[in-house]
Length: 270
Image (tube, rainbow, N blue to C red; front, side):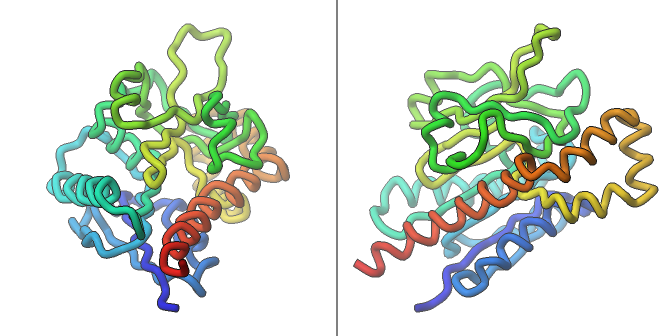
């Protein structure tokens, strides 16, 4: 049987990052079933066509409200995939949005307010499932709360529940409970539809690669200078914990890809 096609949409705008490597590594686990190609969306305005079966759109720096030259083409593609899924009964298009891409799509669908945070959220932090999230197949097998890499200056808050209902979208998780701060908790994951889903956190973060990266002096000092030694030590401790980001890494994106493959192949085999 022919391999399915996966498009990886690089939203990093030429800034160095670990996320893209992690996504490619996860895609490589499925090389018997998938061929993948990386598209540099923001830096080179590379946009795939709608012929791919699965799309993973990465995180990235900067404002998700930025009106770059890539934006209209990117959103046209997403609207085309969305419309295709609405009108097609078979071989639907499956899309996963991470952090920056998640914010862009939540803004596009007008699901709530995309606001700049008072301070950067950074580290390996708890994420709490909602009632819908506890039943959702994507988060199955994860603790509640589970832990994920969080790195963002922006957030989705003030959900427009009527718009969620109109789209058939659901909130799957919320950020950590902060009893000492009277701030609204950010939305950390949304299922837009059966095939479209996204997270505000980084499910692709690989603890082994991350540990190597942050043990290097220059990266260690960036974290300490910006967030303090306690945050650095907490992050490094949590990387080694078997029930924290390794569980998230081994669960969310692999489960999304596996279920997408199974859904796409099922009609072909029946």
